[in-house]
Image (cartoon, rainbow, N blue to C red; front, side):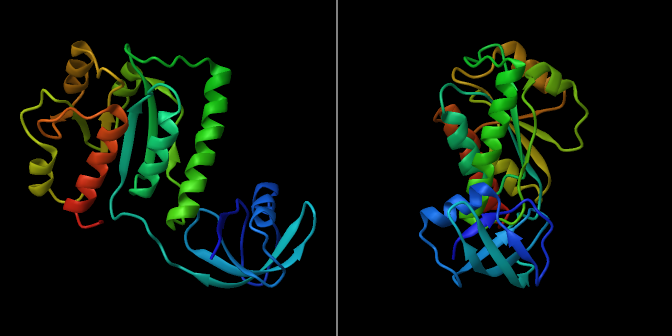
Length: 241
């Protein structure tokens, strides 16, 4: 059944005019009047309805049932990812949403290839929010992970964070899996460096700010692999996968 994010107040019995982007999807899927679709607005649960009108640029749905179903992890997991080159960030965000990340924090470090002006950062945020929405629609989540504005690494490290931070580094002496087996499920932030990793000074700064340094084993993973592997490992250890 097609699922769509709809940033509107939703109630059973409402007739909802779908946002333009969703209406276009309805047309692309060649859906017809009386077909059933699911809508969610990010506030929890999902609504099932029937298409009541399909025109060239418009579509309406009558909402008939509500399900409180959720697919959220039992603990908050934020991925703090130093921006990689090219379109890798899109892929990282998409897969992080599928794996249950509840927050995405883009970062900039001394070895970042990407440099963002204020205008470009705003455009990137809009684009990445679209990636999050599409991933949530596909994987069955009814709540959207929080997307934060890009920050320089040092500015982010200086912030007060209620969640423990894990720095993944090949130089760590303790593995993530060993740590996860001996700790209960809890809110965490996972810090991932760019291509080439964080500099020695940046790693030491993260540790001084309270980050726990852990490894993913003997193999050095790419920046687009490391965070996703860590999310999957923790979710498996803590029973979400």
